[in-house]
Length: 346
View 1: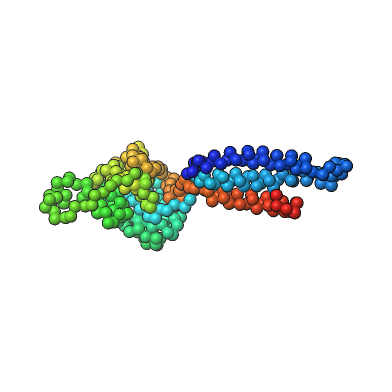
View 2: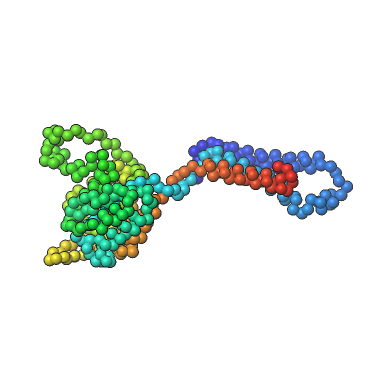
């Protein structure tokens, strides 16, 4: 536990002094008490539990003082709170290899079912956007809270050739920051963007961008699911750096065969292999995590895990109010017991 004002903890040194003061008052009261002819009569009248009871209210009041003094130091603790995550973009691979049936009923159908389940478990306040990528990347659904529209976009996936994981990430970032001017052109050679020299493009230069700490942007996140290696498009590590510079976490999910598999369809065949090293590197660079899903059940578990992590988060939070509440409860309990047992407050 940490404290914002640790110097106030020095006030706890007053607690032993209060104990000594209480003991001194008891002894002083004992000396000033009227001497009875028979002390046994007094003890019998008080009852066996009265001696213990007389110390309970002061003890509770002392604990209330301790709680109040600790609260004054403004303690901090790591607690689980609802996340302020507002937007999540699902970037899903729709390349031809997703028709493979090593994940039943197929990689694509398992991914669609898991994505729908993930969306259903999210709070209705969280917006979800969907990006589909293969040889290129497209926005299948802009961020929305309408789960019916999201499910319809997932059902509309069409398999295509190629795997441009970097393009999928860039499109997801563009979806999160529509006014930032993010696009594939940002990764073209500086002298020939769109085939036009920059000094002749006639466009205003972009505003200067200042990178932030990786993982520091808590209002949005990207979840990328893929089953293969990049075959075209932007280098995913360059796209990951763009995400990291904006503080966006990219959680990566690998599905399918790690060692590689040859998949055939309608007269053509292709060799696919899950590039776990790149997916792990993308996640690490953006302060996120990588997950592997070898079966449909694994994929559902991954999405369930991501749902719980993105809807709640652990934060270091000030808990002075809890100590203040505890002090108030102890003080009231001390006063109540004193009134109930002795018809006086302490």
